[in-house]
Amino acid sequence: MKPLACACLVEQRGDALLLVRVRDNAHWYLPGGKIEPHESAELALQRELQEELGVTVVPESIRYLYTVVGPAYGQAGTVELVCFSARWTGELRPLGEITDVRWIDRVDTSRFAPAVQILCAEYLPCAGHDGPHGAAHTSGRT
Image (cartoon, rainbow, N blue to C red; front, side, top):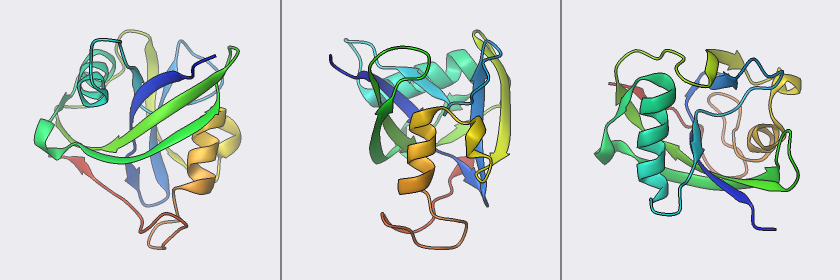
């Protein structure tokens, strides 16, 4: 079975990670969503952040970071998170299927969806430290 491909925003402030909750699920996800067959991952990121958080991504700020593959939460199969950094304009607010958006400390991984737990363990070093895949990353709102 082919993994479900999603375009996701990775945004950190210190050790806090920007995460969203869908329909009051117990676990938290990266902002973003499914890449439709007709669109690029970058376009999917822009569309999903507009639909779900009401922000407009600055297209020239989008930078590919890494791809994380892990178990899909709440369904069979795997998910492929194509992760980006990007700047945006507008205020973050939950829209559509998103019921909450928060900055959550990365030590609280038990609340994260499985693929986000993998992201934190393998790709995101603690603030100010280098990890196995490079320096700590922060981007942000313009």
